[in-house]
Image 1 (tube, rainbow, N blue to C red):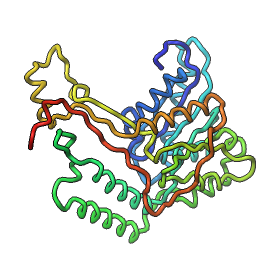
Image 2: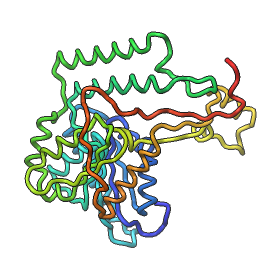
Image 3: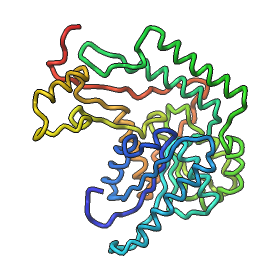
Image 4: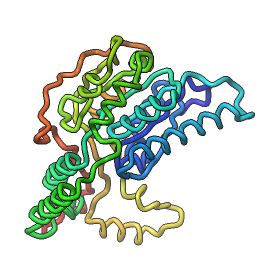
Length: 331
């Protein structure tokens, strides 16, 4: 947190597939804003993607456990450990659900954002739709926005579609799936995610998220009152937001980089000065909902539960850019 005072709580975070490998980039804004709001200590655990979700759950869970043991044993820490919360996004929810149910790891609260428990073939279909939407949303403008590698060539859409068609056929032919698969994960939840864990859990559901398995997770929770549920505006990637400018990206230092070299580098990037990915309004709504949960407040509203898994209908976050006036030259 920004403050040097004793943190109010500890938040251990596990991100989604792919994005979770670089939490310091994909989730930095989310965790920084939560940390500053609550004066919380945030620990993000990276992991590589893979089909063996049992192994990934063990890997991420053990890293979190060791981090907490280190904090507890640190002799330089002049205070006792505060409350500890687990917060996860997408596949990270499944991984922490598996680890916690299997080991009994104790948290003061479990927060699942956009819980995802899709099978492998369905994940490929969703990735295909997302890639097509992303290609359409990242077009090059006359003012020098980011070059769209997805749009290079007239047959890029056909190429993307062909690659995903090939992947879907391969998966269907050899029967590849995650371990555990969707059905086995739901059975594990029914057997091991007990009333105590359910009472500590809040499920965050985004209104336009068609990659979400939260309803299936809630249905699989047997006995007790079940987890609390919170509806939030936005889509599956609402927790993901990052921005940069050309100076930060290139590591420019005005004290040792000649001005001519600085301008040449900017010109080589097509006049792009800054860019952002994601929906900041949706991110802020997510931060508000997570902070309310940690502060013990009830959800502001329930999920809509109105979604279709056959087609992604939510708005894909746009990559936007800003340029200087000198970059808006005619083609």
